[in-house]
Image (tube, rainbow, N blue to C red; front, side, top):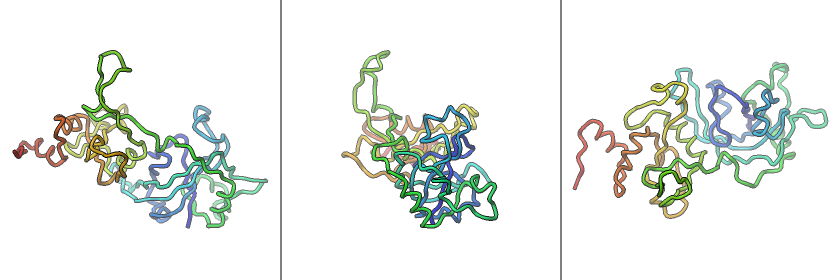
Length: 267
């Protein structure tokens, strides 16, 4: 059965549109892998978010499919992450009411707080009705935009102080893959266990480097990347060390061995 998933402008949940949906365990049965979903936003409460929305009023703004589900290891309440697949944003907002009629059939037992339910099951007919009012956007969106967290030794400044002059190649990375890798692997370093937030507090919340097991510089053009197996979270120190030598990228297991003092380079 399809669902509507709610994404708020501000929230305790670590959602990233089109990449990751963070949710409490009570919604697990509704968010099975393969479930078709429609994104929804409620009424705007802070005008600072106006530019990030399609409308200030409640509306639907995209469709997606629920991917693999992972436990959120940073809490003991059973919260989970759903990886989002095939996200397709709408060109314009689809209002939750058209001609005075709700597109969703409001559940009778909970008429007053229905719109506060974060994950709402809908019938295939309601799903199709919402999509019938939507025009899918065809241009790239932020969820799959490129980000520029450069690996050491890949993006080097030619002249200090001149930010426009560079040697080497700048490799393109995607924000959605980074978000998915963090949902799967967590925010602690998988080599040494360092956690930035535990060390530095709120200022460092959500900070970690995401390392490609096979460096992007070795890709021959575009390549499909699986965030579960091809990416791993590392602290800045460990990330620098795996790339310390230009002609040799260490594996995470090799780095762990170094930290234990038992790593031997095989000639």
